[in-house]
Image (cartoon, rainbow, N blue to C red; front, top):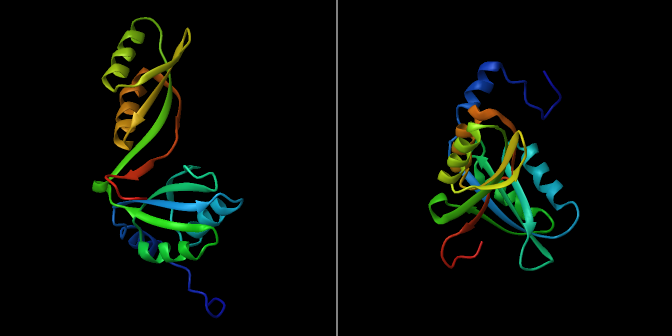
Length: 185
């Protein structure tokens, strides 16, 4: 038995049962924060303490230099999202939070792929890049770097297509999102 107020350790079966409770719905949170040191640490720490795994995390400036936009995606999990958003609202420097609905959101991700190609394969790779409306940003004797912008699904599909050529390295930014129409995020 542990200390008073602590829960007993979970068995492997209980952990596996808990994992099966994931909703599968991807949540995209758009968080407007003051551009101050430590804000990102407090946000990430809140999710870590509650056992949420953040899939992607992107931070960037807004039209106001005093504000930044944090966009994070995560799988809907055991804990209700409304509890997390209430806790986020309590954090210093957090001004506004929206859980964006996928059908009402435009989202994009940027990825760079370094692919090993030479000879006839280079032409095939260029055709794949053209099909995905991607952009060749660097060419070397033995490799090509391609920039892909689009939905997460598009980036993953491109990865599946170029992996057989010899994927050397890949870098992804994480997802950014904005609501459709005149709604403010």
